Image (cartoon, rainbow, N blue to C red):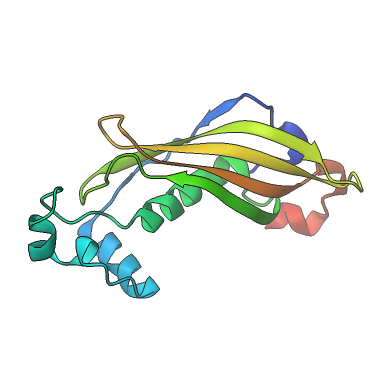
Length: 157
């Protein structure tokens, strides 16, 4: 377990996630297939060639999902009770096959639950490509364990 307990999050801190990922054509195609998203802009090269982008785009939901996955080790791995929401999702620039993304999370809010045994943490997640263009951003709110109330089973997960 490498995630943080509620009390380890500091409002205003930015967590630079070490992992990066180069997105392949296969990644994008599999995600579209699994989610039954047949948008031609993601899977049809001929169609995409005639758009303003000139080529296929990576599915924005894949980009967002990958960003969450990249962020988990340094934020919620083994310390989360639940994801509560994803809000204000934006895709200001496109992601293409072969782009390498990196992620950073900034803690924007935290509060204890009414019973004091857990806490709600909100992070603003930003996703950048290899040129440092912002390609996705969103707010992620989680219900986090507090260290003193975590069970030994929580620490093993």
